[in-house]
Image 1: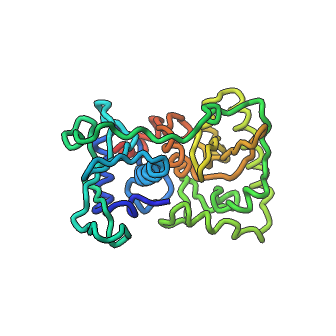
Image 2: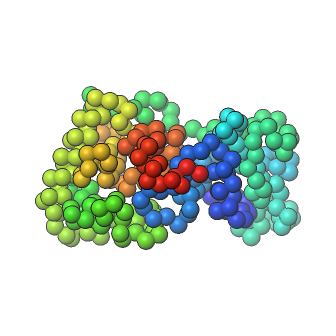
Image 3: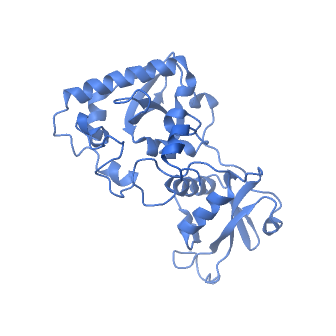
Length: 300
């Protein structure tokens, strides 16, 4: 699975992300609570995975000395935005392409109407993430299997401190530092030997059942996300405040039933959901006015 950094030379990545955020329609590109290495972690992940998907679906278009892929983003004037590549000055055509001899260089982001794109006969198409739109909608007729013990054992650190976890009263994880999600997942299972706090199990079971009842009455409650090559659904888990979820529950569909797979920090859930579309769910922190008031730099 080639990354954009394997495909091309990329300089000043964080500055390039900032330029793209300013070029695109305003939206939330930051985390609300979880620490992150990137100043714009949602956009950072979005572009990296959009590139991978574009590569896998052969939607990177080349034209002589140029290449581009569709970022899926729009300008405020509703023009599509593309990543634009030129041949690297250091590329040696006589040598095979390798990490030391990359063919492409990420030059800039370009609007559909930019002159630099006139050499392309057609623009790259949007990437695709699903085949059946029904995957994106919660089916209230299906049962949900709740594997409570597994979820708590593998993710106890993601729960509130008063339930044995490591998330403070403001919703900030206190044990992550600047670890990314993959690193944290690699450490899952480290608490298997610990007994499951009864209060945590009971709180999780109640929150799960409550969220499922909400989703059965409003399909909009379940937000689709793309993770590890498949569509999952996200539901809010209210453990402390009935207006602000502490975690997001992921549901995987297996034929005629759903499996409650794991729980995520809501920032991570938002990041996965953004691959498919800009989440407009209030519980996930999409367009809530109270969130914007608390984080005035939320919109870039």
